[in-house]
Image (cartoon, rainbow, N blue to C red; front, top):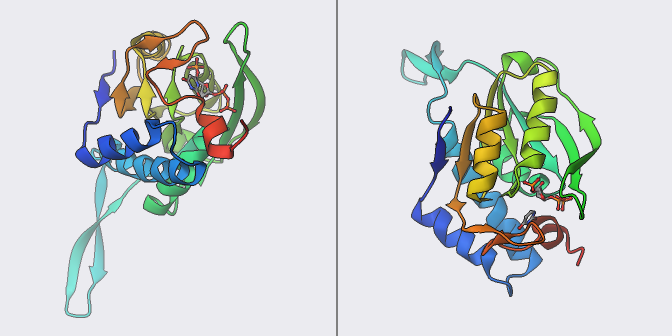
Length: 208
Ligand code: PRP
Ligand code: URA
């Protein structure tokens, strides 16, 4: 079983608290989400292997380091899109695949409506992102799809998770590292995370 990491950096905790407040505007919500996405990715990729590369500075030839494998980012549409810009600014060469899922309101099961892969995903570090890990159904389905494309080295980054979602994801995909900024209490009867931050997609896109 791969570990679950709760990244408790003070800057991330401060930004997450801003996002949780119900009076936070959609603009501030999006800005903080992108910033947290970037900070969490920085942490989640700290073991990325590097290889030596010979370079020349204005002063002298020397040996530098470079990341040796491409990175593929997979936001789960819609809410995962809210973290994409921040992560892309950190890894400008990352390719972006997309998976569109929504939760059926009654069954809470994910329904797929879009999927677009990138080439060479089997040779890449793959990061699946979605701010919310609730029942775990959406993350499990997205990683099923990523694996069907050949993805092997996969990490899942979210903001807020609950224990039931973490267990479900670990059980379905024991080879995937999970990173969250907070492990919240539980799900309510409608499948919302408590205390959570509400519906992430609606808050990003202003749909409610
Ligand atoms: C939300 C969220 C996750 C999913 C998490 O998406 O962004 O994708 O729910 O819930 P789960 O762990 O129980 O599957 P939603 O279905 O509301 O779609 P949206 O992103 O388009 O708003
Ligand atoms: N999806 C959300 O956007 N929020 C929740 O609390 C649970 C699932």
